[in-house]
Length: 165
Image (cartoon, rainbow, N blue to C red; front, top):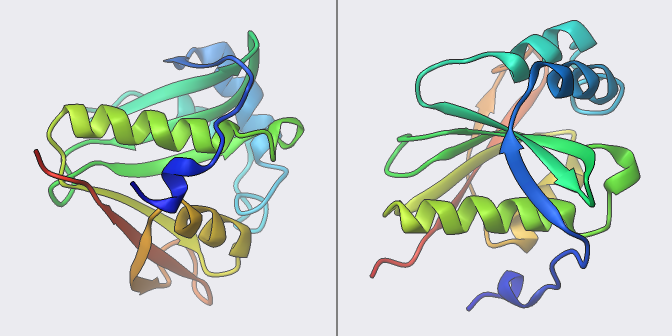
């Protein structure tokens, strides 16, 4: 058990449902207003199209808290012996309520059940809050990818090793 396992989970009802076009539109507009997407100049339309998109090996879910749309999570399966958390966006009204932690636990438990050995995620070098969040939940920095999204910024690659057996 890691320290992250002892952190409280949200006392609210958090569920994960397949993304709908309506949810993607609403989330895209709202999340485009906050970092890191605002700093990268993603538009609401661009994020909405990404969240509503369909592609093999990438599952998109809306995060619902007490029956209210609260965020999105996109998981890319089969990436370096484990899934890659491609996108986690929580609306500001739901920050610091355990919703992100609930999403990570859901991601981890589903991955363990599928036999994954690793979990992967990246965070922008300017997004100290996201970096600290992932580190608190057992992820370790394993690399830096310069200029992945835009020149002058780097993405930090994080890995969490899962227990086998």
